[in-house]
Length: 260
Length: 260
Image (cartoon, rainbow over all chains, first blue to last red):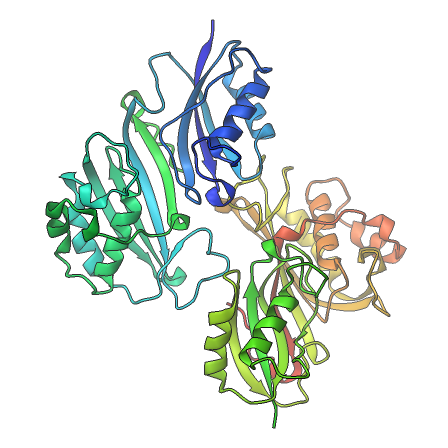
């Protein structure tokens, strides 16, 4: 009897060419697939690993969720040790859980939380270059907080999706957006909680909030951009380095949000 | 009339092969020399850059100090902007100051402050792998604090110098050592303040304090190791990734310790 496992992982996205397998590239999925099959002693057919969704090159995760089936079950604590021992140093296990076969890392998702961190200094801080997005112009917190509320709710996010998206619908529900400042670190932090997000949607929303925060756009510009349903209206995309997949929520797993 | 400049810089050591120029390697000194000569429009003879001392591959700096002479003076604020604009993203200017020709980044030093950060978790945190040293065994703060006091004072640090050191004397003065814990981050922080340090001395001292903190050595082992004057007594060297050159102190510049 095979056993399905839900595994929460974190990774530093700097040295990965994103999540999804790509030829001749080091991706999160390719590393995971290799490690899981090694732990299972390379069965035939090979074990497939399913993620909650892709992250782009340079995007980080504190709470990415994957699932896979092991033909021969391993107790969860042992599997956790085995994974951590075989993972490269830029990837780690947060938790391992035995789940039943109805659980699917991608199709059972109920919502996702993303965080975006902006470093707001005249020049790039050497120690933050891979872990924040850099914005050198002045930012007004009030303006960004006010504007961010226009993103909440169910909207057609066609203006906020990158070309290359294969989504059938661009309608998504955003439950909450929070913007706060860490003055001592010269950082602004954007937290998004939604049913799901389109390709590059969070990074496009952040870029637009930054333009509003700097006064390049009116504070009430978001309803107009949403109504336009035209990617040309938003244009800019904040860099991947500031984005973190914080947690993925599931119908029957709402209690464990995997935040750490 | 040429003008001498004292420049404080910070860098993420991860992608540098240390400070000193080496053939076919990306080093801090080689990047600095190239940038400074470009700003001065590549004069002949080329401008030489002098650092307070070397840092190894992977070692970071918040307050490394360099000096150089520009044949045609540039106002300090303008030079700061020019340097920051031309530096790669893993290097930045902290301050620029015009100094007289008696100042020398290496020979005028009065003391140095180094910090070492240890991440004390069962497995490496992906986001800390390049910015801390990892130690997976339990550590006792009291033991390390008690033992660290035996390092303070003037000692012959022959037992704490790596092979390859070209120092004429292994006698150094340590003014202060502080060890504290950041429980919420699972980190231990070691701060060293001394007249100067030998090659790998800080990393060897940290490795020994970790062994004491874990109980592998008696808490009063340091006087014995110092007296032995034998590198075989200390043996281990903590990884470069946890080490930060915090500030360099100069006789006439004691007030600006460049801490940030």
